[in-house]
Amino acid sequence: MFLGLTEIVGKTLQAMLINCPHCQTGLDISPEHFGQTVSCPACQGRLAVNPPEEAPAPTGTAPKPERKGWQEKDHFNPNFGTALGLAIGITVLFLLAMVPIRHTTMGAIFLDRGWVNYAETFLFFWGLCILLMKWRMNQRQERAALLDLFPQRIGREINRSTVGGFIDNIYKVPPSLRDSIIVNRIRKALELFEARPNNAEVATFLSTQSDLDANRSEGSYALIKVFLWAIPILGFIGTVIGLSVAVGSLAMGDSADPEALKSAINSLTGGLGLAFDTTLLGLILSILLSFPMAAVRKREDETLTIIDAFCNEKVLPKLNDRHQSAADGLLEQADSIPGLVSSLALAHETFLTQLNESTQQLKESGRILREGLEAHRTTLEKSFTEAVTKLTDTSSGIFLKADRELNKTFETIASGIDVMNRALRDLGENPLPNPGAKKRGFFRR
Image 1: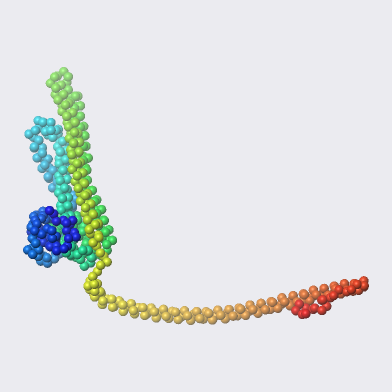
Image 2: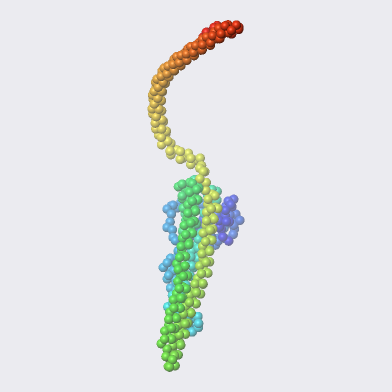
């Protein structure tokens, strides 16, 4: 059985920490594994788990490792020289193995059809070597995903007080698995969180690393894609060469000479055999190379998906950028008290100075405002008095004029009535009353 993350998460009751005797990897052992023999996820070595009373207590004995990081390798592209040398050796051994069956059709295809088939065979084995090395590299990444990078003994969440312990635990991973995609990604994320405790920044960093790893994985298949394109092209080149040989043999043949005709026919069949066999071999090898490439690519994508899921489901939910213990807060405040006191004193002095300047400016503004109000009040009273006086004079003139005109009107009416009375008296009629004779003026009765 393997002790992975899926078996250890959530089992903290009476858990025991032991070191693998083969690779010294720290393992958290849950109670149900006491007294059993298990396999180390790092080195696959077998080890017996003794009960807690018999097991040694390695906690606190190992020195704290220095956190300087490590040189990271390319986890997707195999070594070019190693793959090339391995391909050359395998090609030579394969062709030597074809020598005993050279008289057969298969042996003749690989050995008697010229340099084109040699080149196709070499590119095929070169691509297989790259895929084999990538498969081995991916298995190493899968083994690294089984490591317990977040033991429960350090804490249930990752905060400012526990992130250092989790980083130190990562530095205890054996060198054979330390330089892996998941370990490097989580180590960088935790170191970023230690320097800048912000969940959003860590989530952005993990997403960016996921995209970078996916792009590196996609780019690592560029050379194999070239092989899949070149092998059939070489087959078509062999077809052209074979047809040219066949056509040339027909031109050189002499129908009168049986031997020459026989030789021309042999050259014709040989050229046609070269043409068809090179194309057939190129197509078959390209198909055979496509299947392992698809399998390796699918397995690599699944591994990257598992790593992304682990970071999203196990790492990000554990981060807590709001937690800070009281002791840490007091220590941080104690370190900043002298500077804080000096800043407060300087701020207080600056505040008083600015307050005094603001008070003087307010007093000056008040004085200017009062002077302006006094000036405006005098002007307003003068203007109001002039307006009232002018209104009074105008109103008096209007009323006097109206009174004079009314008096003239009444006098005219009275004169007219007198004239009419005289006329009526002369005619012997009663005279009309003359109200104008009794009322004189607009304001008199």
